[in-house]
Each structure stands twice: as structure tokens, then as C-alpha cells.
Image (cartoon, rainbow, N blue to C red; front, side):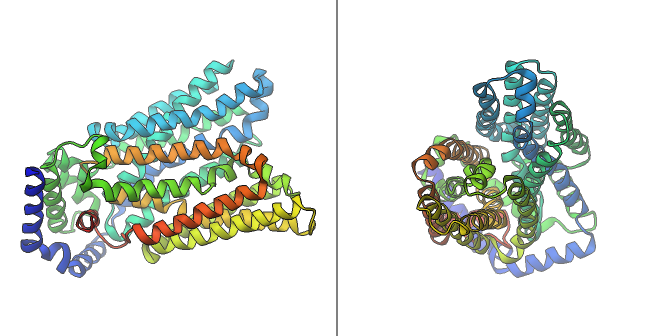
Length: 482
């Protein structure tokens, strides 16, 4: 109670004595930021983002590897269906472990340090797959790459959010999802013409670019100031904003907020459920639940199967899916700082519900032998609408919001927990999809439609708009609303 009172008193004094830089001068702060951008374009922010999203590309390369290589690996190594199923699914378990441990490790050794560690795991994993002569080496390699992608899934959006100005944060954080989609699509396309061992070596390229690029970019300023490294904090922030930009106001705001949070004890996983953190945890974890349990991984992993069941060409449908996903994700990344997070989530949710309903209708007609000519058209329209809707908002925006809402003293534990929930949802949906389709093909998509509709209600009622606000302003607003 004493700690809580100290923090509340501090926040009260801050609101009364320092309201100007945080609230009253919000427009002034934005104008100053625009002026700074005019003085020197934040090229280091763009370059740092490029380096970081090589981890996102690696994520997509890991996720997209098993689909185009299945037949060749099974034939060359004489694997059973069960052995290859383990190889395909063990990636998710590695990612869960990476999600649990990546946050605390990032808090301890830094964002750059944990990206180096994740790259090392991916390099070791790809080499194990390349040299594999049996199922064991394949599984060890796949588990290692899964661990690396689990860490990347947490640290890349966090790092980008912590280094970018608020007017660029949403778009640059959304590039994370764009690179994942691009890598999955590229892996699918080139995997059809390259040997599976060569495709494993290609997975080393983004790791090499990332490891080399990390030597030239600064560490997260917010992590540095949390660790008490004041000179390095100022140097990193100045390097990111440009040498001629006045960083004093932004630096003071970050330092004041970190000093307030440092008065609180170090957060553990159980501490996340305390009242002062509960709002941000509900928002972050809730969005991950909505994203995954709306059916994306079941539909993503079994796209070919869905098209075949509906009587449509699986190759044409899957290629259309891959191309559309990349294009619409790029559009969403461009809009997230203009339209805002909530509008994109709601537009996305509407498209997800409609896509599920159209696909459910196609399977209903097929089951009851009605309007046979309409079944393939409805199925492909529903699936492509679903993918387009997911890519424009629900794919990227939950990661953007997750990177923004957690106070830095719980960011490792809370971000790791949210990422773990995301990976558990990915596994649960992909595991249950075939069982649900056996139960009722159209009922499966009606269930996903209902979950996505409930997700829209959650977004309307619970999720705040974070566009155009600093991380400190976002977190302070959530805390005062509890």
C-alpha cells in the first residue's frame, strides 16, 4: 500500500506540475516532433527497423519451410507421416519456449543481445536441418529455429516501438507482420523449385544480415535508461532522432516515467494480475486471443485442403492467397498511423466475419447438394476476403498495440505472456481444425465467425486508441482508467 501511495502521489504531482509536456502541450509536442523530422529525417530509425525486421523475415522463413518441402524430405529420408508431423509441429513448441523466456532475457541483456541470441538458435537449427540424415536431427533443428522465431515474435515489435517517434511507430511496427507474410510467400514459391537442403541454407541469409546490421544500430533508449546507463541513453536517442534534433523534452519524458516505474518492485508473472497492471494485460492478451482463435492458423495451414474440398484449384487458390496477403498487409502498414488502430481492427473484424459466413455458406450448399456451381466461387471469395481482412488489421495491429501498452518494468513478463498465449492459440487452432471440419465443415466457419464478432465487441469496449501518443502517455492513460 505504501508503494502504491508513493506512486499515486508522484503521478498526482506529475499531473499538476508537469502536465504541460504530457497533456496540455500534446499538440506542441507533436509540432516539435514534426519540426525535428524536418531538420533531419530519422534515417537511423528506418535503418534500425530494417535490421530488426530481418528477424521477422526469419520468422516467416521458419514458418513457411515445411509446406513446400514435405514431399521431398519424406521421400529422401524415408520418414513416416507421423515423423514428418512431429517435424512440422515441433516448431510451435519451440516458439512457445522462446515466447516464455525471450521477454525476461531481453530485459536482462537488452533488445540487441536477445536478437543475437535468437539468430544463433536459428543458424544452429538451419544447419542441423541441412546436415540431417534422419528424423532426430530434423526435429532438433526445427525446435531450435522454433525457439528463435518465438523470441523474434516478441522482441522485434517491442524494439521497433521503443526506438520510433510516435508518428511513425504504428507503420514501422506493422512492417514486422509484412515481412513475416513476405517470407512465408517467398518460401512457398521458391520451395517448389529448390531442394529442401538449399532452402534451409537460404534461411541463414536473414540471420547474417541481422547479425551484421546490429553492429551499426543503437540499443533501445528506453531499455538503456531503465538499466541506469544515462550517457548511452542520450547518445542512442540522439542518434535515432538526428544530430541536429533537440531531444531534451522527449528524453525528460522518458526518464520521468522510468523513474516512476522504478519505484515499483520488479514484476514477475504473477504480478501481472495485480490491479495496476490488469488493464494493459487484458488488452494485450485479449487481442492475441482474438487474433488466433478467430481461425487464422487453421485456415492458413489448410488452405489447399479447403479449396480442394470446395472443388477449387488448390494451386491457384494458394498462390492467390500468398500474393493477396503481402499486398494487403503492406496497405495496412501504410494506414495504421493514419486511420488508427481501432478503426483498422474493426474493419478487419467485419471482413473476417463476412469471409467466414461466405465460406460456411459454400460448405452448407455442398453438404446439402444445393447450387453446386456457386460452391467454389463462394469458398474462394470467402477465404480470400478472410485473408485480406486479417492482413489489413488483425494480423499486425495486435502486435503494434502489444508493443505499446505494457509499462517497461513489466514489458518482459507481460510481453512474453502475451506471446505465449498467441503461440498456444496458433497450436490449438491448427490442431483442432481437422476435428472441427470432420464435425461440421460449415459449423467450423460459423464458430470462427462468432469468435471474430465477439472480438469486435472486445475491441469496441476495451481496446484504447494509441495513434499519435507517446508510449508514456498511452501507459499513463491506461493506468488512470483502471
